[in-house]
Amino acid sequence: MKNIITIATLFFSFVSFAQVKVLETVPVEKLGKVNNNYIQKIGDEYTVYYTIIQNDEDSSNLRKFSFKNIDNAYNNLYNIIVGGFTATPLYDIKLELPNNYIWLHYTGNVVPDKATVQFMVSSKERDADTNNVSEPFVKDQINKLFQK
Image 1 (spheres, rainbow, N blue to C red):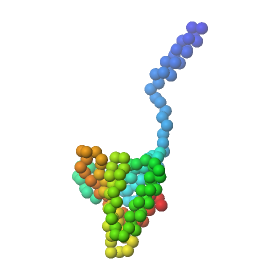
Image 2: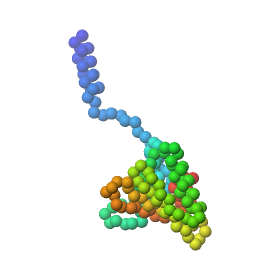
Image 3: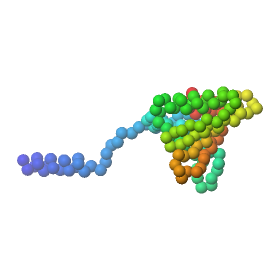
């Protein structure tokens, strides 16, 4: 009986003081990619990584903004961006995400079907005065980035 109590005590001490836990992992999917720009999906959260045109010497040129796919937000963002290419005249569209404001800045070109869009992203935090501007994308690049 003593041996059973000793074994049970040792067993419960190992179980209750375990330092290693197995956590559920969510797969990371890399969606479309254009140059160094890409979209990554983790669970129901999408993160858009984009290259900025400003070049600060002490920072990376890759920035990001994220959002959850609530109410089909991923497809809605794609439709808003693509719809802006056909607007006449081209105009900027301002979007609000949980942590950022994003302006979709469209520019026309003399060559047909070569209008471009740039992401102009600013943080909602008070201390963040920086605006990040992405490199310009044509419609085909947006389709590839969103895998459409």
